[in-house]
Image 1 (cartoon, rainbow, N blue to C red):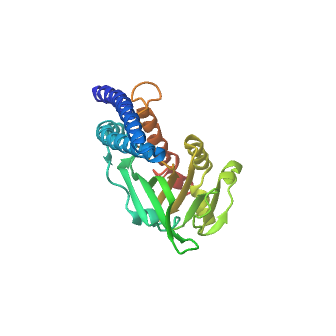
Image 2 (tube, one colour):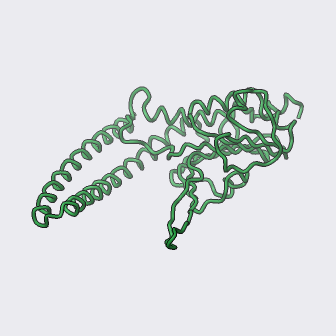
Image 3 (cartoon, rainbow, N blue to C red):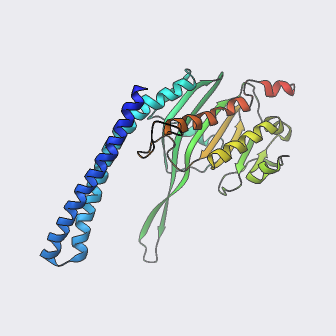
Length: 299
């Protein structure tokens, strides 16, 4: 609890210091603008130089203190949250899931940039799991009429990637893909589920219609819809080689604390992060990865 209070006090101090620094730099910018304008009579240059300096200096200072704050937050508070969820889970702030595992289900196209952080791995309720934040971008090069090259970057995936082991071997391949994401690769034949709401949000493809229905039970589909409504983001799943692969497209860095979010009180950022992690990990229980789902069907 002392760590939380200390870091909360540091957060408030940082916010106060940032306001003071911004006011100080803004005052210098006004003086610099006045001097430059009356010296050169060039309004745009006089405005641009002080403005650029203020933005650069403020952002440099902010990045420095926020980096230190984030380091303490992750290595003290977030690590403690994960340990409280399960002592069998390890947390590595600067590591992420290898690209071979991300691409293995062959859902997403190959990216030019692949990076991430916040790796959580270990056992949860007896099941091997791992998850991390990932960020994938594709470099797109185009040329204008004069032959000038233009480079832009398109985000392929930004969010949490989750892998869990089944405690039962199966060879079928089943994919549950969001209806809203067009570029995802599809594999197998279309499978239609009985859940109308689930069908509105997802398309299912499989090479084993019977096995797909063993996996996609009513409880599972209900849980997936609950997660989708909870996060209000797109989700994609793959079941193959006795593993489940889950892609949650948050489009932001999931575990980076925001300075304006309190660490104390109801709906604090700590409570939100714990709920978010548990919401994902509880799929282990809902999917009956402890073998019950398979015993019910005599597999």
